[in-house]
Image (cartoon, rainbow, N blue to C red; front, side, top):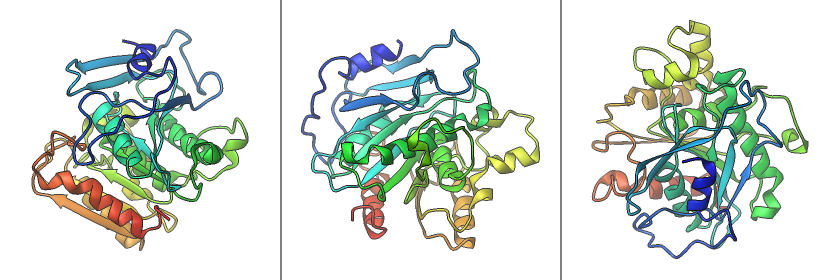
Length: 326
């Protein structure tokens, strides 16, 4: 399955249709559909090394009641847009996980996009380039896409009925690393400007890394993500550069952190290390640790009936206090 097939499944190769009404307390029954989709870059993304490289989508669960799709190769990074039903001016950039080997579509992307849109927040799901694919400066291509995405959202704010000052970021697992990377290294020059959008600020007003990969320290790193991002033999300086807990500073935005203590994939120490760094830098941070949840619970059927199902509402209450909702 390629990107065209995915867009066709989402209803984006023909006229765009509004989202159907969905219950607020449960994820959609079947694949959610974005309202729009657009590429991040004019032409090819910068630094492509293989002209024959193509997008590729894997359908991991064909059951339409519990969709699970992932892109394991991304030639054309893009934003899929979930328009707020009653826009309040807020927007969130969503970076799904996938161990930097893929970008999941549904449980850490489209489900949350739908949930936010129902609450007046326009959601932009980012399909970012992967470091294992043929790109120059591969360890920074995901960050380049995240910076570019934030700038484009602000550049197109009027089109999407968004206040450019109220754009946050949320990410999951390896996408949580990207979210934290954007929050701490938003000012790194990782690509050459291509148009007027690149003059805008890529710093999110707030950030929510959810069960995130954070540290590249082998003592508690998620080694799959570490190997994909910087290689198994990376030196200490490279590991530190790509460890958000080592890059926190006074300009890091307020953060909402969430993790399950029984996570056997990404140790909870990742969230605790980031929290400690934020506290040391006097950056506002709220942290929720759930006894049960495992890894990759997203928001939906994996959390039904468990306290972890409440995390999006906890985020929303926190974000309201930090001005996201105006």
